[in-house]
Image 1 (spheres, rainbow, N blue to C red):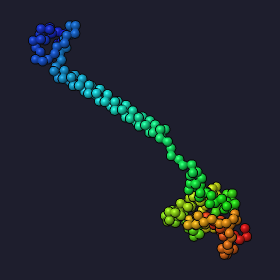
Image 2 (tube, helix red, strand yellow):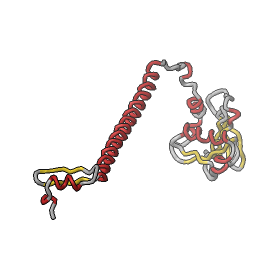
Image 3 (cartoon, rainbow, N blue to C red):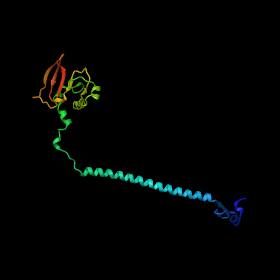
Image 4 (tube, rainbow, N blue to C red):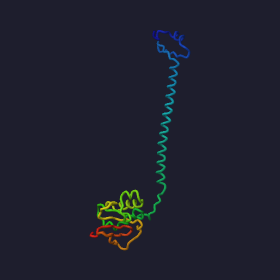
Length: 204
């Protein structure tokens, strides 16, 4: 029998305690306490989810504001604090002074190509430079930087070999011409001062 066949009085008398009877027109709908409890639980879960979603959005916005604040603060400090710069250091830094060591030898080198490299006049290899004396590796990099685009290679078999003596970097030679010495076996060595020397064939 359909629910609509019952009268309201019949439903009221047969309903257990705490049950809810809803009447829509001539139709009576009975809702149990379990359904009412599930509705309350759903409302609680929905309210908790809204609170969590609100708290998450607040944390995100707060994080963005903090990042922007500290970024602006660092930029402000850079603008307010004056830069300490000594103009007397212009042209006297390590890289510039190292480049000046090679001013004379550049005239005896080709405009491009590959030349050999020997730290302190001793034959070496790439592995020895990488895993050996740190100063030799550093001087090799500085030499390559100063003589680019000429390639400075720590390998053998080149017609010109540059030798860097780090201990003689401050030794100056009088005059503009290099001192030429015999190196033996048809080779000669040109001393340009400041610890820079060039080995090349005698006939050149």
